Length: 249
Image (cartoon, rainbow, N blue to C red; front, side, top):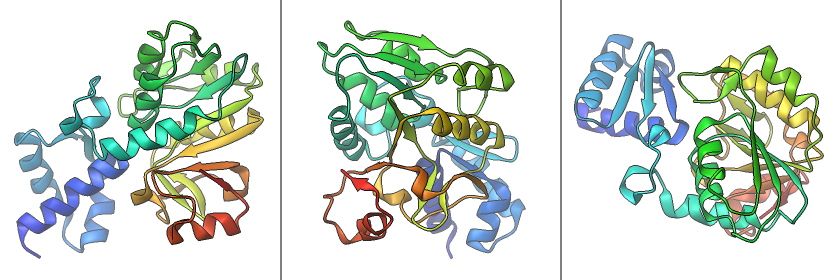
């Protein structure tokens, strides 16, 4: 594989999953970790990724902006956000995670909507705070440098004190057999609690993430009530999720 092709695949993985590790990319592309490290340094110098210890982060994941060129699959994420809005009604208590799709959801909320949002995502909280009709409660704690969300025991204790009507969950990977997975243990711990305490769980995911998995499990697929993608619910790619009894929007 040529370097240009390899770096294009690396950039796709970074934008798709927000964070990549040297070890995972090395196994996936069948090259040495030193090769991956050099590629990530070059991509970072070109301004395409953010190089961090052990891997890299997506630039779009950390941009508090809505320029189409800066957000991976912008149109698809906007479509998902519009579908997710249909699940909300006045008076609900909504728990929402981070991620660029949930940021877009927060941006396009109808101004007349009156709900209470809880979130541990700093970027999502900042966007929700601009909404004129709803209340936003930020769940504070130690901020994860990678995901920009609050983590740790204090966050989990706070979560156990609320009973959300619905949790809007962004995801790194989703598989109809494996369930929801991630690569960051601190984030997984918080997401597990978010799912456990919520009456309903809706996963917002672009179709590129379907039938993919990471090393750390968050929950089984039957712990999810809704799957929201940019695809038509009748798309063949969604058949395994219909079979798993999810309501697909």
